[in-house]
Image (cartoon, rainbow, N blue to C red; front, side, top):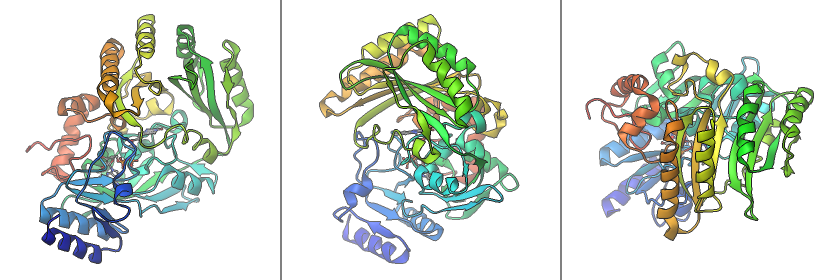
Amino acid sequence: MTAVEAGAAARLGREIAGSVVLPGDGGYDDARRVFNGMIDRRPHLIVRCATEADVATAIAFAHEHSIAVAVRGGGHNVAGNAVVDGGMVIDLSLMRGVDVDPVRRRARVQGGACWSDLDAATQAHGLATPGGIISSTGVAGLTLGGGIGVLRGLHGLTCDNLVGAELVTASGERASASPDENADLLWGLRGGGGNFGVVTTFEFALHPLGGVVAGPLDFRYSREFLRFYDDFVDTIPDEFSCDLVLRQSQDGEALATLLTCYCGPAEPAATVYERLRARFAPVADGVAPRSYVEAQSLYDQISPWGLRNYWKTNAMGALDSSAIDALHEIFNEAVSPLSQIQLEHLHGALHRSAPETNALNFAGAKYDLLVNAKWTDVARDDENVGWARDGFARLQPFLSGGAYPNYLFQETRERVRQAYGSEVYARLVALKDRYDPANFFRLNQNIEPSSR
Ligand SMILES: Cc1cc2nc3c(=O)[nH]c(=O)nc-3n(C[C@H](O)[C@H](O)[C@H](O)COP(=O)(O)OP(=O)(O)OC[C@H]3O[C@@H](n4cnc5c(N)ncnc54)[C@H](O)[C@@H]3O)c2cc1C
């Protein structure tokens, strides 16, 4: 930064209730780090906002100095949109408050909260709203991009349960969205990402939830197992979620791991698990009755920050024998032993919500596919990215509809449009024209305003 800029940043630090972190400050490197080790960006300043007014002040500062802005919730997004080279990060990590109203079954959640914050607060009242499966993921990014979790069959996507939001728009003004006020904006926040402003408060509908039966089941990988899985998930109740991860064990054994959760009492859960274990015997079985909070952090250890990640994603149909052959070949060709192919099963309430409830494009899809290249060695970037891209290209004949915005990497405008589908995209553009016509919030899966 120049001396003038450094002086201005210091003034900003004095004006806000939060703080400003600058290059050279202790903690700068931690504050600019995000989940994906591929992303190594150096912002000019990181504004740690403590209040809604701080967010408005930071936005005004960015306008005044004509610098690009990234908004950071939990910093989990693999595309790295929570951090920017040479610009400003509006970091919400000081704003993690959760306020639960158990009578109305509502939770008000600040924009920097993680799922561990929200799940702990709601479960204290025997309630929950659908979230992601890693407890350190940000509530903000996950909700604004959709939200696929273990309660999807019973209560839909996270964003389907978003009933209100407060945000600071590109002009620094405060806006609210609810079914009664700016309902079109509420729709846009249900999947349209951080395109319309910085969300400072989310309000969620909550549902009663006691304990669950949950855990991973490792099976020896085979094509027959994939066939079995594809049939089995057609028979599961809404309470059950069952996602498939093709991966290698530490000893190099090919595994088909099922990440399972039965959101309900142990007795009906036992019947589903019996059917699941009947045909193939698991080689490792981590299923047990658990509190929901415990179940929601089961996979934290196996998703460490800092690995290099490159993701390709799309919605996908049922697995016919050609799709299984293609998955088989791609899995066998993985360059890194850490890489995975994941199928998240989409069912129940997720498909029952009316098409206009959210901006997602999962209609008719059976799975959300994620080809996840993961590795550590910088020198092997090209090979690993190449594996994911090439594998994804070969899976094209089996893909359906759109793509999940939260799993997209750094994509072209055309790819973002295709992910949403042209009709939804046009509706999102109309909202963008209204709330952010100059595309101030552009570090996201960007909906370009029509004037650009
Ligand atoms: C290990 C891992 C596990 C995951 N598991 C799941 C899962 O189970 N289910 C699922 O659906 N997804 C999952 N995801 C994907 C996750 O939903 C996305 O990465 C999501 O964007 C993360 O949100 P965040 O707030 O942590 O991210 P960030 O990187 O902080 O932000 C993501 C995007 O949202 C914008 N943003 C963040 N906060 C705000 C705000 N307050 N207002 C406006 N815009 C904002 C950012 O600018 C950025 O564009 C997972 C990702 C990882 C890496």
